[in-house]
Image 1 (cartoon, helix red, strand yellow):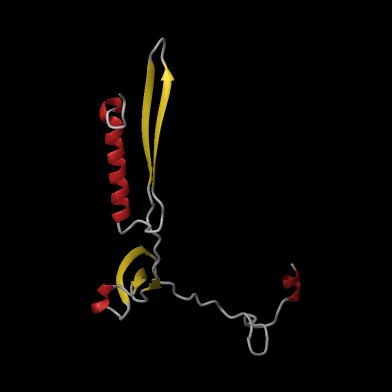
Image 2: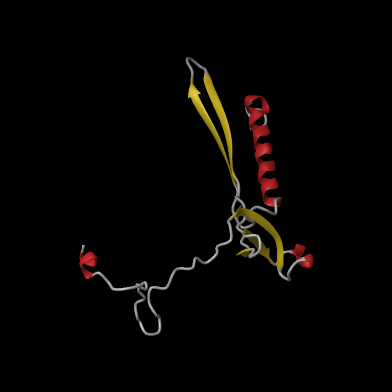
Length: 146
């Protein structure tokens, strides 16, 4: 007589136990979504293989929960002395030696500090008067038209 325990020389029952263990570990893992449903599908396919012969293929699949969602707050800034971009996590336990509420930092790509480029002023911002270069001597209007 064929039973669940002896079908395919006990392979189906062993796959069932392994899948059940996977589901149990997934439920106990604190990183997995605690509210998600888990599942198992057992599929047995019977196929005639000639006169009085039948083949049975057994398959066990599990549906496990994915990682639980999490969020954090990161602070980003640039060190004015070195020009390095720093990203720090807010509120970590490692904040005792650093600024209150700031934990570890991740060094990102170094960007040289930006210095403001002094553009010559072309007009007086108060009056709107346009600055022109000083000319020494008379202005040759014929040369200016060319």
